[in-house]
Image (cartoon, rainbow, N blue to C red; front, side, top):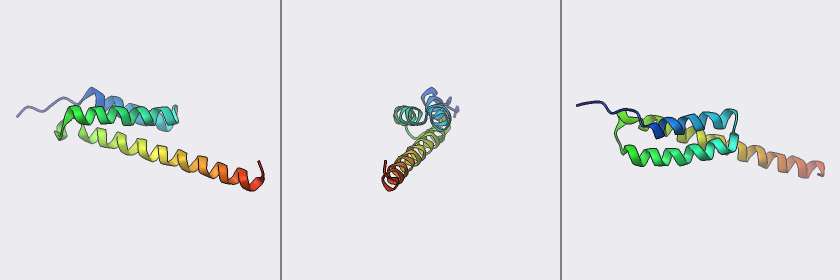
Length: 84
């Protein structure tokens, strides 16, 4: 059985997820989730085609969005307590 090539969409999703943690916090994470969903549909369940990379991109993106949500909520609470 011949090994399948890693999906370009999976690689793109992972790159956007990493960019979400570095240069483009919210945009990168949202783009990673969109590309990860498209890659997962393209790949199916073949583990050698990049499904692990897709799952890693999804996890990185969701955790990044959660961290930003917590940062924004903390800023709102601190702003309310300080009186802004």
